[in-house]
Amino acid sequence: MKRIAWMGWILVLALLPACASKKVESSVDRGEEESNPVFERGLKALEQERYAEAAQIFDKILVAQPGTERDLIILYNSAAAYEGMGHCQKAVDRYRSVVRSSKGKFVQLEAQSLFRMSIMYECLGQDTKTITSLLDARKRGKDLPYETQVAEIPGRLAAAYARMGNRDKALEYFNQASEGLKKIVSRTNNHRQKELLGRTLFLMGQLNHSQRSAEARPSSYMQSLSMQQPYLLQAIEMDHPVWSKKAAEDLKLGYENIWKFQIESTEDRRAFYTRGLQVIQELKRIRLPGAGSLAGPLFADLDRTEAKLNAELTKIAEINKLTPAAESREGLKRQGRLVDPAVPSESKPKPKAKR
Image (cartoon, rainbow, N blue to C red; front, side, top):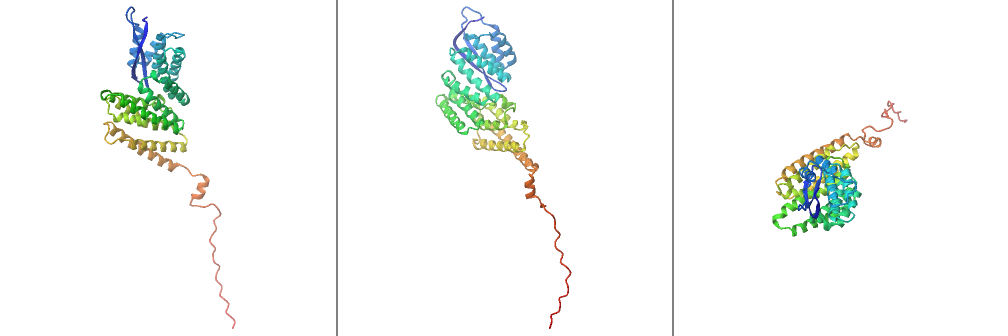
């Protein structure tokens, strides 16, 4: 096996159907030892999004008590493969093992694992743990990419707090994320700016696995989409050949999934559709006219979604039965005994007045 020298790691972004994962590959001292073909095969499978194959490869070379740099890299990449397959709990277990086994020795791996773990908790609908992991990752911010530290983490914190109904905290972190984006712009030259901003904005708004599969709670789904969609729209308006297209696909899917939720309660369904209309209006208000070639078709789809939501709300209003008390008030027939109108008795001749 090759000896892994921790001279620096390479983070290669592999975009998944469900979420963004990162494989970790260390630089290699190839002076005296041959490379490990199994490890290299796992990295290639992960990069090419063959996640089941990558998980199988990395799991074969895992050790029971990981402690070395190489062990933890293998464990991390195994987690990334399970993340790619949408096996969120399995990925959480792997990422958590990286943090516990590192014990402060490999801070970059710990920081990245905590960040990825937060996204997996988000996938599982465990927002309290999502926030805790994000805050822990933020404490190790100097060991994360700058854009993750100043923009992605506060952006995801904003969405998590929104799902929990804490609007004040959500707005606080939303504003921090906006300031972070400004910092990225100020320190990035024009040549790299479009690529970096497009990617960062997409990752800030990207749908997680439970959102993609419409398995989230309906109420939290809309709250989260409300916070995520400004980033996706800005990514679309960047008109980048890769990130704008991915952002448009995510935002379109976010609204298509409205119809996958099976909500039994009429009142809950009315609230869900009403919130959907509100979120669409929020997005329309921040649209930049004429920005991005993909924005036009997206908003045409949103117009159709809006019309369908209005139609569904009309149906709900028509089929919603009145309560007995309301029927009593609104019905044409009133309760009580019908009484025939009094029939005047036959008139008798008036007695003649006495003289």
